[in-house]
Each structure stands twice: as structure tokens, then as C-alpha cells.
Length: 88
Image (tube, rainbow, N blue to C red; front, top):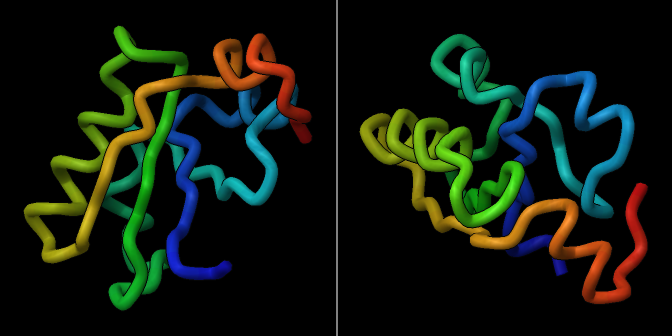
């Protein structure tokens, strides 16, 4: 519905191989330099490789400290695919 921005915090090569529909790619280690690409009036929901991956957590910590409203999607690409959902 456009209420959130889905952020893929994995490395670019992984995003290009497969990602959740509608996700934008900003790798976790680039977020501090690229955060201005994200709108401040939207909830940023980040994901990475799954519940034990910290890339999304690291990216969201930077964004939260800078004033963004953030949330974590615990599942990653593999869990999304295993649930039967399509990938891009």
C-alpha cells in the first residue's frame, strides 16, 4: 500500500540474485552513507538472510539513531520462498 519501505540489507550480489518483491537494496555497510535515499515519512522494514542474520539489525540501528521509524522482518529470502511466496 506504500505505507512502508522494504529494505534488503544484504550485499548487492545477493539482492540481484533474488529479493522480496518491492524491496530496495541498501547493503547494511552502506546505510550510513545512503540513508538520505529513504523517505523519513515511511516506516522502514528491513530484512536480510533470516532470523539469525544481523545485517538488518545493524542497518536499522543506524536509521533509528538518525530518526527513522523502523521495524525488522524476521524472515529472510529463504523463509519467504519456503512459504511459497514469489521472489524477484
